[in-house]
Image (tube, rainbow over all chains, first blue to last red; front, side):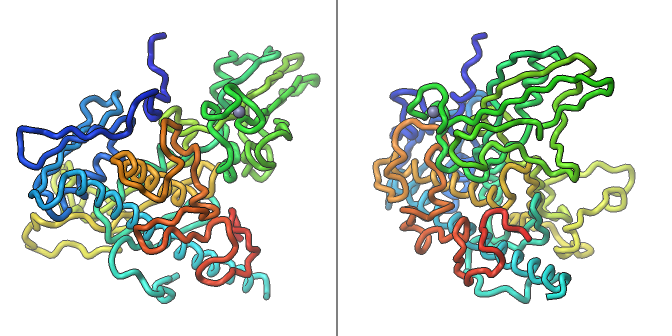
Length: 126
Length: 335
Ligand SMILES: [Zn+2]
């Protein structure tokens, strides 16, 4: 009856922004990022890779409630770059890494296809 | 068979893939040189956010079968429909029509009445699919059984009738599991449990009581008395992706990856930097609504990141590895 529409799990509402930065005054060079309509798929990926990124001192994320698709990510840097720059850099690197995965997968799959087709040709007496 | 021999130049660092099994319904592969979050995000995205089409609205003109309307409607939603070619099909809620139209909806109708004494079986193959739809494959029920019948919808005895009109729409599994492109995804790492991510229950000896995964042969077993490595992290992941039939297993992976890339690109633009991937992705929109020009045509999807963008063999006959002489299909061209 009063259940929210299920598409609200992944569709931004009117006037909602995908990502908002809030500077956190309690720590130096620290920002909190709120990602709306996202979940662990992005949050865990970004947080883990931010931890490994240069100039990032600290990073963590939380999803406050499993039914609420809002991600909170806190990033602290050493001051050489801003948390926002660190986040953008990680996003770019991940897009590149997934692009490489795509190429690798395509190549392997095409090879397999050729091999299977070759085997079949042999079986058919070509 | 050993495919290692065919390994060409592997990109020095970064994700590597080794496919161990593949056919029209499944693909098993090892993903290595990545971390757990990278592999797990791929698993999550292919299960939850690769769009497919499924029956979403059913109008019952007649149902005198023993099954309730809702019960049949639920069964209908779960029938896999061909979703190989839905890149230019919008989500109904993003469509200009505001409700449903030929661009965003496929109509499937079925009218069956049992007249004989024998029990009549009504199958997915009894559907007739509207010809006004984005293309002539989308929405066709997937039929893989040797008799060509497809999934059983219900049974009718003499005099019973089922007459329905169904609207199939594009969606993702985050909204309802009927939109999943995968029926199962195996995800496994560290077959010897060297990392102690599992705490195995045992009577007397966990080693003897727990059967080894088939991937245990792929990695070195722990040495006797080997000290625990506190810094070790998983690095090889074994995927077993099983398609529900509506999208080919390799396409599921490819589409999942572009879905993830688009998510990341939206963050970059959201933070105020131009990401040349996604000028058109601003504003609220269903995921996957614009997708996959990337995948299929590579149109305008040149990433500045990651050397020259995703050159994919998908959908175009020419691959970087020469045009394959095997029926240039690209799509489901498994011979
Ligand atoms: Zn429409």
